[in-house]
Each structure stands twice: as structure tokens, then as C-alpha cells.
Length: 156
Image (cartoon, rainbow, N blue to C red; front, side, top):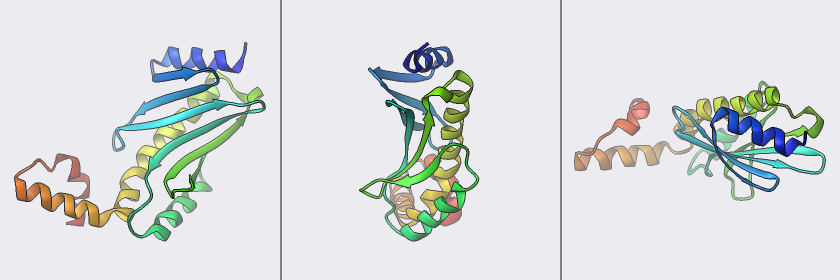
């Protein structure tokens, strides 16, 4: 069975939202803190690449955000935090094609979801605290709901 078919069959069996374009799968993983994590699975000649967007480039404390990510990398399975040329933060990984099976796909996509979801609020607190405070003040001044900001009430 080809790796592309293995991935397609696995994603269909899990009922995860995805789109396929030849050797690339764009997967949407639903989380709790980070409501959606978009992940690309790219089948190359020798390996499967995994790339998942976590957050955009921090507005502040960029060195602290990077330090937080780097301290997490050593304990992570199959993935690592990385930045792109714009400074946006991703989870990236690579797997040899002969290691791709349903069990490993489940483990890696589960890791993407867990790492992205658990990192989301801490990274926002470090890298976007002032933006969160401005949004909180804006919502309060207009009587808008603060439900999407409740996790950050300790910053106020």
C-alpha cells in the first residue's frame, strides 16, 4: 500500500477534516484552547513532513517566547517548535516513509494537537499580553462578552 493511500485511509477513518492535493494533506485538528490547528502532511521522495501553524510572530517578549519553545522541544515526541522566515511559530517534524502507518500517524497528529493546544495560552500570555489587555479594555468599554478572554483574566 502506498504512503499516500495509508494517510488518506487513516484520515478518512478518523473523520478528521482534511483536503488532499496529490501528495499533500491539509488537516484541521480541533482543540480546546486553540480551537483549530492547521497541519500539512507532505509526502516527499524519502520522508513525510509535518508542519502545523501554532501562532504568528509575537508582538513582544520574542526572546522569552523562543526560550519557552526551546525548553519544550527536548521532551516532545516527533516534533519540535520552529519559526519561519516571518517569525511565525510552527510545529515541524519528519518521518521516514517506511515508518508511516496508522499507529504512527495517530501518535503524531495527537502530538500536534496536544502540543499546539497546551502551548497556545502560555505563548499568547508571553508574546501578546499587551494586545490581550487592549482587547479586554475594548470589550469592557463596549459591554462585549469577555468569554474568549477568561483564560487571561489574571493578566488584568
